[in-house]
Image (cartoon, rainbow, N blue to C red):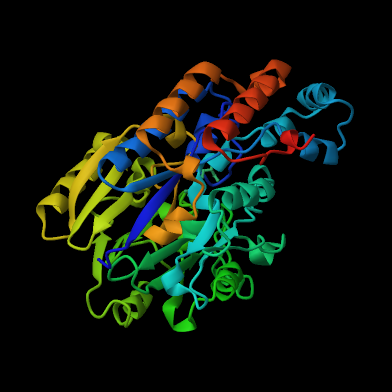
Length: 446
Ligand code: SUG
């Protein structure tokens, strides 16, 4: 490893209004959980515990704050009017599905917050962020403005971090962030190969999925590569297979994951698997690429979606990597058997840890969705807001904060309760103080 560099994971803190509203077609877990009761307290504690587990393994770990909800400003844009209490009451009565859209905790999946390019891949030597416009799902399309504020408050120092505007809100530029971007390299701090994965090429849409939406477009990925000043020789674009999207693979991170020189993927992941040769021949990998292809006769796409085998966090150094997997990978026998075989093989994945993120999984988010990876060096790390790093002290402060403010039972019907809105504001106001983030929420501007 180039000493000074490391990869930090920034996990999304689960919000006090975490609920199951069935908002995401094509995301099978979200559909199956629709209208069930959630447990926001358990969800937030599971997430924090997972983040601390990774930190305790010796990796750098940060936290990203959630969004403020209900999004009253969007509800007003939709025609509800009056005081905040009146707006929520009208929406609950007239259009509860719109209230649920404006009350989603979906910003917790920070793999969708932005695409990130480390300084070793960008011409200007800065770390670049483009918040994802998330326009394919209404409840997520309202995240970007606050996501931008949270990213700027977290990655503060303009000397090291370059923050871009989200891509235009047009279907040609539908962008879901890091969940559709893999980066391969021979070590932290070394320039890498950026593997952008898209679901649809709007200029040639014949290969589009039939049942469920393709959330990432080729043009969005190409635009990000340009804005982030990535050398065109260091970017390739693979199309995700429409058949797997139609089986519930709504993001690339549900079917493949990369870390350093290892690419772990399902054999049916891509439209044209022969394109993987482009990766093999990349000078950035110097012939040292390790492809770990999971065959359909060992783990089916259906089992991969149910277990989130590829939504695992693949972390660690070349030759000695660890997979942080959801407990569903242990419970689904063929997946567990496969992982046992993998550990025993010569492959670089030597350790598998199972973590419980059941509340998040029930809405289609595994361990990898919950984190945004940012490769940086020690100097750049100094430019991060200090309260955003997960230390022993703020782990304690955050778990106490969750215990104090969160409910342990929430149904979509409870979103009508104005008390919940007030509780959430109070909790988030206190959070910005714990994390030292300043005023990032609209309600703090009044
Ligand atoms: O966008 N679920 C999220 C899950 C995102 C997971 N992220 C990655 N794979 N990177 C989504 O589909 C469900 C919300 C609800 O139904 O209440 C939701 O938005």
